[in-house]
Amino acid sequence: MSRKIYTLLSLLIVAAFVLSACGNGASTEAPPSEPDAPAATEPPASEDKVTVTWWHITTDERQAAVWQTLADGYMAEHPNVNIEISILENEAFKTKLTTVMQSGEPPDIFQSWGGGVMNEYIAAGLMKDITADLDANGGEWRNRFSPGALGVYSLDGKNYGVPWDMGMVGFWYNKDLFAQAGIDAPPTTWDELLEDVKTLKAAGITPIALGEGDKWPGHFWFGYLATRICGQEGFQAAASRTGSFTDPCFVKAGNKILELNALEPFQDGFLGATYGDQSTVMGNGEAAMELMGQWAPGAQAGNSADGQGLGDKLGFFPFPAVAGGAGAATDAFGGGNGFGIGKDAEPEAVDFVKWLTTAEAQVACAEAGFCIPVVKGGEAGLSDPLLITLQQTLAKAEYFQLYYDQALPPAVGSVVNDSVQGIFAGTLTPEQVVQAIEDSAAQEIK
Image (cartoon, rainbow, N blue to C red; front, top):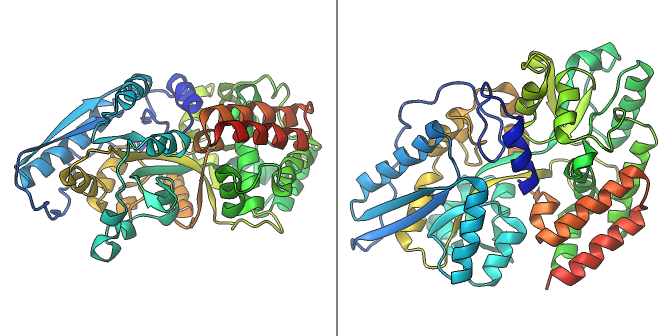
């Protein structure tokens, strides 16, 4: 997830909702005292003593204990391996990782969100190609993952890491307000969404909460619309410089935002509102829906007047299909967490990551409330019905589009957020927005 989201969530989440440092919605159930041991992996041929360094950012003690227990289990099965774990707070991790990357000595396993930063490390030769490991034994390891999520950790058809958690942006809606307006079911197409906005307004209900003062919430609208309209090939062509962000499909995505804006669907003052304000409006039942990531229920509760949020009134539906778009209706937009593999990692380090991405390990992190599983069978650890619905929706995605401000180099991501805000404010046309993004991409992506 983008850096801004992590910073904001650390201020929003209350103790009643145990969310990870990366912003995922959490189960409120206590985790098991010890996760089931994953099935033994086949140890590498060498029995020499090997030290594996692993940096992660799971600072919550209960959740970090899950990782430690899994590491202890692996070391018990592989006595020649010593796993050295360093737990770092999110920002401290980024600073320290930048330093060691500059020195050319990355840890063997480290927290990664994929996207532009990962691609820069790959280009510098700092990450290990694990494609052959994923494809070994008939692709047993590769086939564990939902394909869209695994693709976030690849570049030019090669994998340099794997996900362990993946969430998606979607619509969180107030079922009571929908019923009050006479809306029987959530919209499945963009046109239906616009009609529902009109219906809600006619009933005196604010249709959508938005904190566009923080910019990144609006980028979700542009990114999802572009994913639906341009599809995988459109974005990848523009990002790889074989195409352009001035392609008509990106302009069309901006024009769809103008269609929505014309209906005046947002709460008063949305252009100056923060994401915290957006969550407050939703959590207090003052708007019918918001477009946001998997952490939304916890943020709504933490910012609501009673600290409880909407409870059973809250529902979830995926971003609607856009007629004539090149993207599939099942394509997902969002982000999550993964394991990056350093360039000098020994085979034992890769084997350990296989251990960490078994179904049993995924059940353990889901039960502890800090992941939405991406490995088949891991979903058994989820108990929250909304997160189960989200995970089932995500599992259908053949293509997963990482947040634009994460997928693209940081400088380009900032231009996306800044310029898209101009569409919502009416100060920039879609043509001007995509030209600004293209100009930045031409300069930053080599």
